[in-house]
Image 1 (cartoon, rainbow, N blue to C red):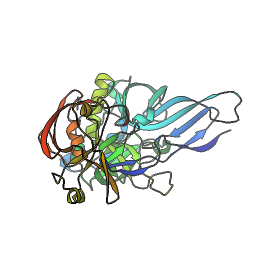
Image 2 (image 1 turned 180 degrees about the horizontal axis):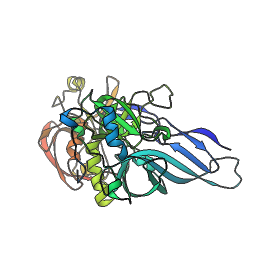
Image 3 (image 1 turned 45 degrees about the vertical axis):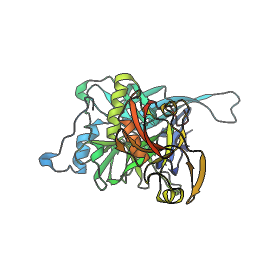
Image 4 (image 1 turned 60 degrees about the horizontal axis):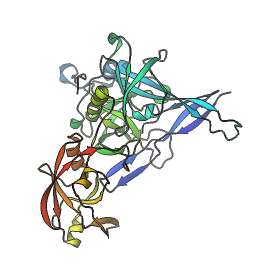
Length: 400
């Protein structure tokens, strides 16, 4: 006997604006699947350099049509099947039993060596991962490496290079609102489905499966549904500009796309994929603070020494910031309904670059490696000074 049920996505629905850093985190809706004898198949919902293929323009420098984009790139888009064994949750089982779950997502080929990019949350916890180029083939895949902090994973399949169509990787820093885009994936198991739309916003921040913020995410209204996770978002040059990872259902209770999807930017993908291929893991530099931007009202009410900068709200134990003596505020105040901790250091620059927002500071840190030094310009007790900080490694979750 077979029945259908809705399975919740591991990333819960949420739409929050985190004041510290202005993070906008949205999670996916639900997963639709069939419950058979002992196998549950679920469509995994979107949560959103180094020798890779370069970008190529369409003929004559014009943008490609949706049809041309699909013909060129769909052969490089794959379906991911991640199989895991879980304990049965049936309360009427007398003895503990196990059942097999198959999570279905998307991915795409990035080189002739058989490397495939997908989302971390597609394969999380899987004992077996397979890649399919059509509905009839299943190729066992090796997990080369995963990075929960960017929701990315790299697989590798053993097949002849002539059968592979690597997708060119573009430049997500040049993406602009209004740019036409095409998403290709396997929504609800329908292989290689194309949906078209535009870039709705750039520079979004979304939440990774481990709670860490992913910066520079691309928002699109191209329809992204369950099973699209890990598939490419493609521009009119035929180049990948992002990995489709998350959707927002708002407060509608809908189980599918409502026109708000998010993709991890391809420039992040390039960096992380290169690290995963080279060493099996990605390392992210870590300062170890929470900070909030100064507002005009704070300056007016508390006579701060500067009009722009970041108020240090918390310093993480064991971090480079703590070891360098960075001080967090200890005096709570409420201004316009928000709580701030005053009396700590005020960050105004890093490595000679003025800093007025948390994303600016995060971007400066992201250019470095764990162990690198960061020169932080701060105001302490009304006096400006520079503090040298040795960056650490980002912990597996925001709480360490």
